[in-house]
Each structure stands twice: as C-alpha cells, then as structure tokens.
Image (tube, rainbow, N blue to C red):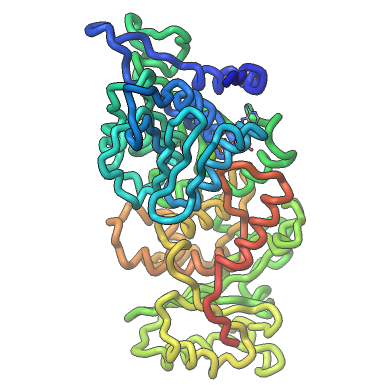
Length: 500
Ligand SMILES: Nc1ncnc2c1ncn2[C@@H]1O[C@H](COP(=O)(O)OP(=O)(O)O)[C@@H](O)[C@H]1O
Ligand SMILES: [Mg+2]
C-alpha cells in the first residue's frame, strides 16, 4: 500500500518532522533505537492527527511475516487514552480522518466493543486499544501511543507503557505521546535538554536528543485545518494563567488563582454607575452556601459586560460578588433561617435597604453537593418560589474544572475579566474572606479547610452564572463546538435536583 503523507502535511513543517523522525542507530551498539516522540502543545494544534500519521506508518512498517509470526502471534501496537470514549473521539477518529476512504481497505477487522478491543490491519498488524484504567497485561509491542498524556490518570504509568515496546521482531520501535505541553510530569519526561551533537539524527532540529524528539504544535499554526473562530473560542475558554514560556510550555501555576490581583478584581465592573453597597441591595441577587460548623454564604449579582461578545449564553457574562457571611449554625434549619434574615424576596417582603433582594425569575440558591434532601427541604420552605440548585459532585470537582472555571472567569487568555469582588468586601480580613482566599489558596496547606470553604462557594456561583465553554481536544467545527459547549454548560454543570 502506497501512502503519501507529504502532500497532506506539507503546511506544517513541525508536524511532518514528527511523523518522519527516525533515530540514528545507537552509537555504542549500532542497533536501531526505540524512538520516543512527543507531540505536545495546546488544543487544536494537530497533535493527535500527527500522532495518528506516525502511528500508522509504524503499523505499516511492521507487517505479519510468514515464518516469523504465526496464527495469533501477530505484530502489535497499542493506543491508550484516558477512557475508551476518549479513544474513539481522539486517536481513532484522527486515524479515520487520516485514512479517509482507505479506512475500509486498511482495517480488515474492527472490534470496538466487548472486553478486548482491537483493530486488525490489511498487513496482519493488530492495534490493541486500552483505556488508562485497563492494565496492559504483558503484550510485547512494536509501538505504543498514549493520547492526552497530561491527564492525571497516567501518573506513575509511564514506565510501564514504555516498557511494553519490546517485540524484538519489529523493524520500527516507536513510543509516542500526544497531549498538552504542561508543567509537571509531562515536562519532567518530555522537555528535553539541549540536543547532543553526536547523536543528532537525520532530520535534526530543536527538540531532538538521540532517539527522542519533542514537537510542539499550536492551534495558530494549524489554522488551515480548524474551523473559523476556533482559536478565538479557545482563548476565551482558557484561563488567563495558562501562559506559555518562551519555548511554548505552559507556565506553572504558583497559587491556585495566579491571575487574581486586588487592583483588577476587587472593584466594581467597568461601566457601573452605582458606587455604594446600598446601590446594589435592590438588584436581583443569587447565593451559594457551603455547610459546615461555620457555614460559608456568598452573595453575587449578574453583570452584563458590554465589551464581551454577546452570545445568548453569555448575555449575563460576568458576576459581581457583593457579600459574604459565615454564620455559626448548628443545623440546616437554623442556617436557612439565618440566611433568610439577610434577604428580602421581591413581591413577598417589604424592601429592606440593608438586605439582599431575591427575585423569583432570576435568583438561584446554590447548595453544596453534599446537602441532604432533608436539609434542602428547609431552604425550600424558607425561600418559597426561589430556584434551588444542588451542585453536582464529580466531574466539576475542586481540583480540576471548578478551579479552572473560576480561573478563567478571573481572566481568560485574552485578558477579559468576568469576576469582580465589591470593594466593600476588601475589609473582610478573615482568612475565610473571599479576597484572602483568592490570594492565599495554595500558599496555605493544600487541605486547609478554611480556604476550601470560601473557595467552594465561589466555585458554585461562578459555575452557575459565568458559563464559559470547556475546551475539547480533537476535531471540531465551530458549529459542533458551539453546540457541544452549550449542551455541556447547560446540562452538566449544575443540577441533580431542581427543587423550587
Ligand atoms: N495535516 C493535517 N491535515 C489535515 N487536517 C489536519 C492536519 N493536522 C491536523 N488536522 C486537523 O486539525 C484538527 C485538530 O487536530 P487534532 O489532532 O485533533 O488536535 P489536538 O490533538 O492537538 O487537539 C483535526 O480536525 C485534525 O483532523
Ligand atoms: Mg488530541
């Protein structure tokens, strides 16, 4: 089978270099080396595509040979992705895109369901598919490809994966990864020191050391293959803290919210006419509550920033935090009472100048994910007609997406700020104050309950009200991306039970 990749990948020299890379024979033994290639960068850089192309070349170079292999003993490669779903959306999809109509001739058997998932190719080569959870139980491989290498599910697995590439009959040994160029273990393993002169392989440029090559691929270099507007979408949905260093590696995150600054964030939103706390108390307010011996209660209001792109979802595209309380309460009923005394509900109570107004149409009360139905009931009773949302645990957990959501609301990659803290909260000097939380989160011990509490309520409110799209690695056209993001922000961020 003749395959000519040169035409298709002409546009990006770096991508081509990664696909083409052959390590020189080992200088001491003269034997071919196991090549280690990392396609790193950011979403949409073409990493998985380039990795798919290289992977396929290596499959072609290691065919079933009569007399060398027999029966089920076949030349094998493996693809690993965080989940089998990721595998289908990522590596396998890119392989399909790459092969186009040839797929049906190239792939002679396809088993993608059931316990063992694999593909058999025209030349007798077998591709084993794994999720990060499934153990790689002993195959001797010609090559392995690990996609989304930055995912935490791979921590500590790298040696095991690498060690599987050991089929002595293979003519081309390849270990490759694709994923985000991120500080942490990705950098520890794949950020190479300066190239070593006497091991420079054929197509040497930067990022090469002996048998190893690290190629950095970014969406702005891949614009020809991306839907119009993709890079914009990306900048808007990425936290501003995700800056690149001079080589393109994403900078380390020192504190949990590195972009937070008192000047930028502790102020009223631009264009705001009100100046005093009392100018804000008659506006619709939402709140989030985290239970505990000392509960955390946070009050926020929607803000519409005129300069931020007006899409339906983002019409209310920012949030101003207006108040914060930490009542001492023994149980949910007392807490519901205490919070109720801080508010007035439009159409139910008389306006009260120092209290926060709740509006049945727009106000929401977000409760922490561990709230029991019994506890929810107290709030429902006290706040009749107001929407109550119990935050969901899991995917939106503290470490990952919740923190990212707040981080990018503080500032996206383009510099847009969507989260403000009212100046009168500056004097909350307590460690449980939101300003202190933003500045000190990670400076404190990682499991500092005090910060955690203040941080949790911020996440609930932001995820509820400043929905920014998540980024999806992999092929997307702008419309599909938009749809996906809409569905996601609308469905998965929020409710298990809408009690209200
Ligand atoms: N050389 C290429 N020719 C055609 N399409 C490409 C090429 N490189 C990348 N693409 C396309 O660009 C999109 C993004 O690439 P992908 O590999 O999914 O990016 P990443 O893995 O870096 O997020 C995909 O739709 C992919 O098929
Ligand atoms: Mg990818």
